[in-house]
Length: 103
Image 1 (tube, one colour):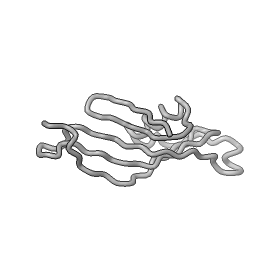
Image 2 (cartoon, helix red, strand yellow; image 1 turned 45 degrees about the horizontal axis):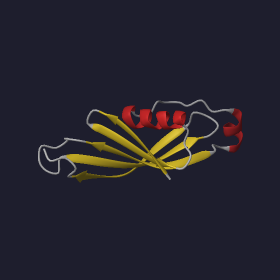
Image 3 (cartoon, one colour; image 1 turned 45 degrees about the vertical axis):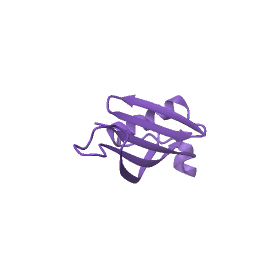
Image 4 (cartoon, rainbow, N blue to C red; image 1 turned 90 degrees about the vertical axis):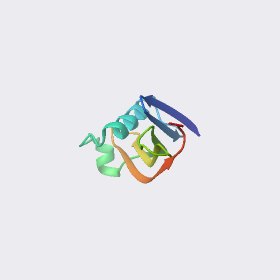
């Protein structure tokens, strides 16, 4: 299991996966940061036989979200990417407040 970490200001995204490519990781980060990109381009194999999915777990830590302790929030997702086309999906699992920052 590998862990990919992306940081942008007060947001930290961690993706745990077994074999996502750099391109797939970039697509997952973009989806988690910016939301659903809309329609994905499916190739003929996916149209006929369905997607060939790889699955991972992702968490988004948002620091200094709340004015009272615990200040931060972590949201967990199950992420999927297709090996053959640009389909990706992030399914919300749960969120929790965490005390990772002191103020």
